[in-house]
Amino acid sequence: ASCAAVREAPLANMMFLADYLEKMAPRADAPGPACVLHGDFRMDNVIYREDGSDAVAAVLDWELATVGTRDQVLADVAYACLPYYLPPVVAAVQTLTKFCEDSGDVVSDLSPGDGIPTLEEFLDMYSRAVNRFAGREVVPESSEGLAQSHEWHWFMCLSLFRV
Image 1: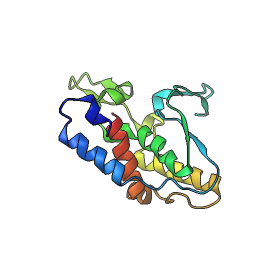
Image 2 (image 1 turned 135 degrees about the vertical axis):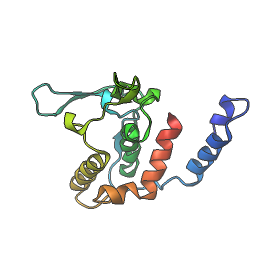
Image 3 (image 1 turned 120 degrees about the vertical axis):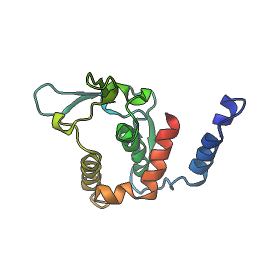
């Protein structure tokens, strides 16, 4: 794995994860046309319209984009879901945090009351949209089914590895 070349003594856990990712990668053979993978898809790389519709006006930061198969889009979805898994002090999610005056801590700013979906709602919306677009079940219809799949676990591990 390339992480071994970055450090004189690679961290054992990182090498374990690199080995797991290499050996357990899902097959990238989904039928259908190729699709664009953003590579850095997250809430702070999206600009929303100001008309109250929550419609996306633009997606920023395309320098990591590539072409892949439909089953590989879970890489973007998993990366976008990192804030649901990581503590708010991790640099990768600090744009989605706020300072809590009561405790003096940095806390998550992912408040469902602010229009941010829960992880389950996010995955449900994703599953319905992908399956509707494909005209068949490409990913499990429920957030629970998707979140328990080998593919989801693998792509979450890949996202955490990247951080």
